[in-house]
Length: 206
Image 1 (tube, one colour):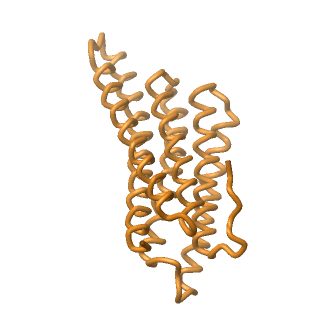
Image 2 (cartoon, rainbow, N blue to C red):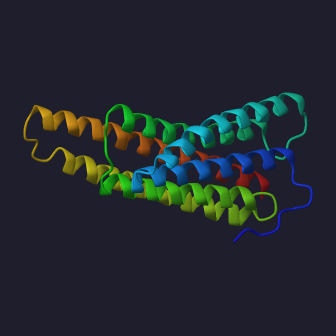
Image 3 (spheres, helix red, strand yellow):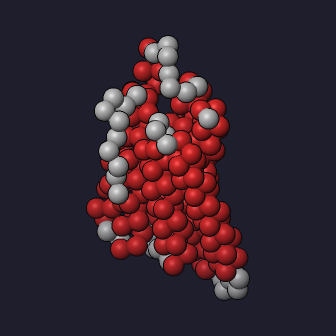
């Protein structure tokens, strides 16, 4: 449920929120591609990754032109960077799956589902940042919990992957799949970094 936003939302909070919205859209596309093999999901990831890059360029340009910001300029820059990085890794996940001809499996599906939940939490955090910073902090903590879940699934997946390799061909398949797992894990790591910045901002605000 989306609550009404402030009538005059600060420019930088608005830009960061828009980035978080674009991230959510992109990760939803990744979920479609991984879960259903839906090519339109892959196309969404590619499109949103480019759009997010442009949003970040605009934010940096506005930082150069603006003296007063709602919170530290370095925090704005870092938060924008980490939001963009999550989507970058969603894009490379799609890219690697196609280049390496990797098909999804239950572990990858579960990892992307947790990443999707993390992106939802980041958007909620940005929507609450200005008026309800402590609620934003709670969403940031939930993001970090999702990252922990991704890492747990990643470790389980890799352990099973390398248990009982049959031949060289099988080993090559395992290495390709592990590479894709790693991209999703990296995406979750960047979501965790974004959550850390949100936590830092909230502490300074309160």
